[in-house]
Image 1 (tube, one colour):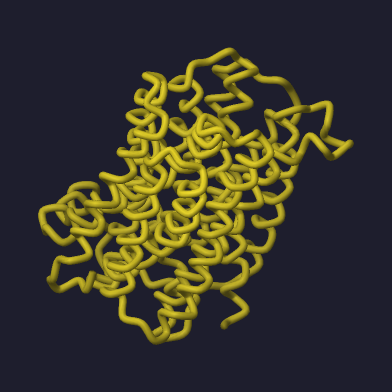
Image 2 (cartoon, one colour):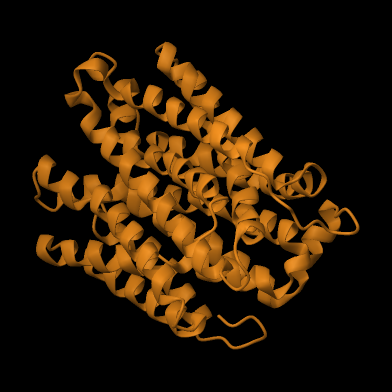
Length: 382
């Protein structure tokens, strides 16, 4: 593994901070006296930024370079974390900060995935991208843990739910410094792309299906992050147990699965790996729908491992289809991360209607599509 990949891995770690907005929603819901749907606005404003800024981010990367886009994303994220660190924001200002975090994280995703190809040894892109997603999962796990554990740290105790933001700010600043120090020889398109040329890629079914797959996958993952904790409590678990077997366990298993996937992909072909991952996700979410606490824990375990490698498999396989258009494809697939804004709203509506366990039908449908996609043939081996 090249040393220059390490700062990129660190950038993936801080990408996971955005995932903490799901678990943080419960504390914000109490603070501002919100409904489940309104509390989900934290995740909504993070992920809707992907819809608005992913394609422009891909175009910007082709002009200023992936490294500069990474630094811009880290800078925006640092600012977004600094404001709640210094003051108690109104709900509107908080959503503005979360939206800026979404823009910054969009730029990190758009630049981070293809730049990994530029810093990786030949033939190591898919493997390193799986490891990178593992580091992102580690960041998600740490961020989620901090959301629930920060109140026990005396230094941040008085800040309440805001106590995580100073920690997140420091992480962004350190990552900015490390990324700024590396030198990257980037592959750039001969002709600068446009919005129209990027969107034309969607006319090819294989890319359109992959983008929809990313949309549904991210939506399903955010549903798990947002609703596992309250749903497990509704099933009869106490708060401590629900915290232990909820989002923290889910993101820990994502991390383990992605690191394990990085090792396994040296020998396992993408198509069967994608198929098995999607099937595990279907079974895991199905177990959560039973409302039985023992089966639900098994569902979290299967779901976490099944969800783990969907993104790196689908992303790397699709980009390798047309590597010369990596920036545009990255922009399109990162735009699909907006599924994390829209899909959880559907599940939030079901939860508000009292359909707690049954509401997991939303991520179940998402993973049924992914499993069907995994059975498809075609030039891109998914």
